[in-house]
Figure 1: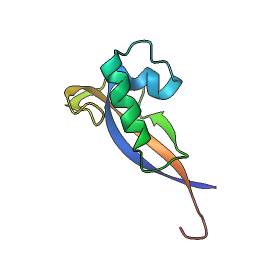
Figure 2: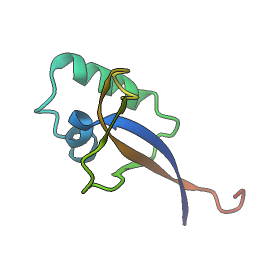
Figure 3: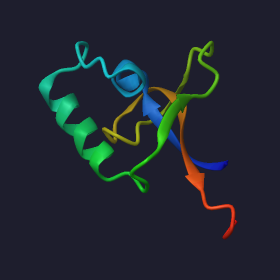
Figure 4: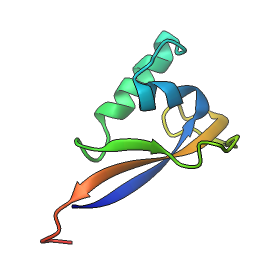
Length: 85
């Protein structure tokens, strides 16, 4: 099976919720933003991975909140149909 991916710059405070499903560090407005983001992903059967988890991150615009913050690069991997690839 082959995979492709989409890349997102996402605020560091969303990492635990995205990777582990642990929303405990988020406030209600963050949870709403994350849920909306997840509901509107370009694929339904993807898997998120944090690129370079040992990195401290970088300052950029978070693609979930739209605010500038410490971000990390995430990849959303999804299977592709090898017959059409």
